[in-house]
Length: 573
Image (cartoon, rainbow, N blue to C red; front, side, top):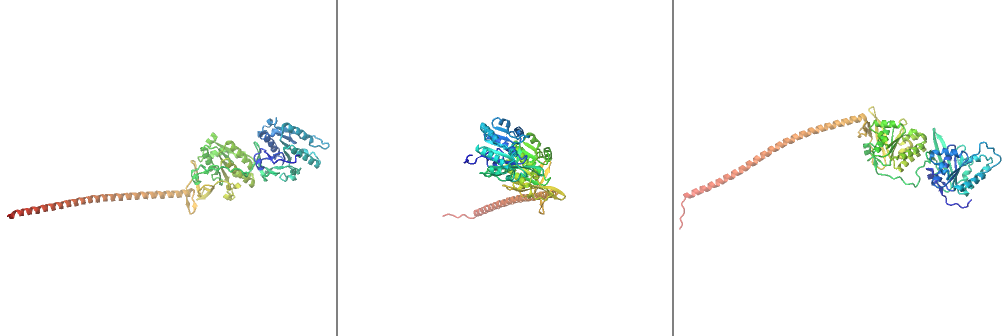
């Protein structure tokens, strides 16, 4: 064994999420202990670690099977698409080391012979990774606890001397959630550099798998329990956003909700890549409102996925067609993908992983989940909240505009803010639908509780569904209450009649004013004619007077002349 070790490096496992919570994978050149009960995924974890090393890290591996045969292990892993048959040629080696069922033990034994054979195989193929699966099976043959401890230390020293990245899997005894130190062979926890606990439990009839890193020498790691699933490509560990990860890109671009008047109330529609929550009691048109969004997205040519928990996809399409929302044509064209979520069984984690996978396969830009509150029934509060966190974090990171509906229990007197999974605190836009009973009618009301980053209306609008589509009415109030249904219709009618009466009165007033104006114009014209006559008369009078004055002057002159003729002319001397 070397006295000095190089700085800690890590060997990626290829398990989505696990490498994030460990900061890169398992300790390279060191030993990891994997503990779990039956069906917890120990063998699958170890095999996926070897496959990733052989395929992506150029690190051939060896799998030592103490419980199942190599043939069965390879057959069980065929569904994950790992091409084990191809890898077995040069990069993977399976060693069957199961004790024979009819074995009669005589005397003591050790692992020395097996390790010698493994060392030769390691050199031959240049193996850098190795797994000892179900080591407890062979150790159980040793009756002496000191002998068990001796063989475990022998194995550990052998791994360290060859600087192999090793995994040892053992079964958990009793309560698999207890400390590793309390399990059989628990002393191995103190020997190895990394210890991981897997557990598989059933809660309310729903299967739950969880993983926790118990210890990791020389490295920081996430100490909390993380849910994981066995998916199409192997194990997938659910993790929240890791520290230091880049924030999702935000956009100022708007996308339509499918209802023009709602877009106006929101200042132009939803933000691209935002998360939208629509809450309400049963029958308040949550599915309809999410359907209008899906149709608007398809009209823009954006690939959309609609996940329905309550009804079959064909029923959703038929029901939405009754209010003018035609999704069938987009399903046929491939732009819209309808998913019946009831076909997905399991926990909330299962739903999340399957929906993410389907959305990525479809290349969805917009996603509708109706209703997301169904997840709450298959998980406890903490798990459901964690799933909601990761759902929104994933959609934002992928640039997907997410619309979720959430069903409120009308009989439980639950408040709006007490929405399941507390997703309302995470959503960017929260639209609440409710009933308003007035004058013996039950009518639908819509209000915007919040919409981050944009001005939005604080009014309560009546939501109207008809065969021509979905719309919102103007706000009508009386006595501090919003009027809907018949009362709104009566107020609209009264306002319409008052408006019509005002228009008639205005028309009559205009007619009267026009008549008075015409009368004044006639009188004005008569006065203008009279004025002209007076002016003509005045001018005529002036000319007559002037003429008379001229005639009189000439007459006087003539008279003087006549008188002068009768007088004696003076003689000149």
